[in-house]
Image (cartoon, rainbow, N blue to C red; front, side):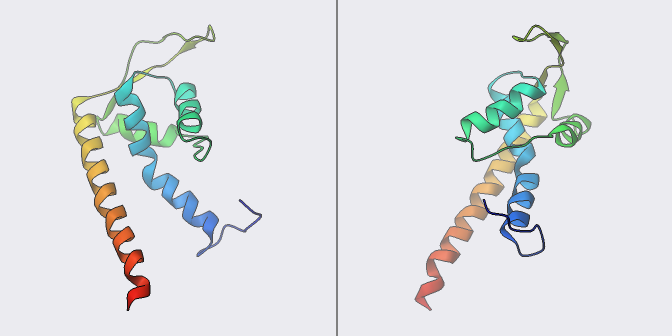
Length: 122
């Protein structure tokens, strides 16, 4: 991405807003596959997206998900790096929330795709 300033109407602003809107869905998706600690989550986002997505500071989304009852803290345990880490897991409520988020995302993106495909036909 270029040196575009982050202002209303910029691609940078759009990208940042999309990340904020999608962070909970991304985190829930990863946690639904396996319990993880925050460092693993941020690495998995980069790796599994082929480097296209980076969420460097997911703490506010983690706290929202905790407060909402969508995830819970597991016992602290030693991670592969040898340090004690706080692991997180998805609740049943979180799985339902993830399904609703994914449905909403699917409907919205399909609607956007349909709209953009018809732009040149009018």
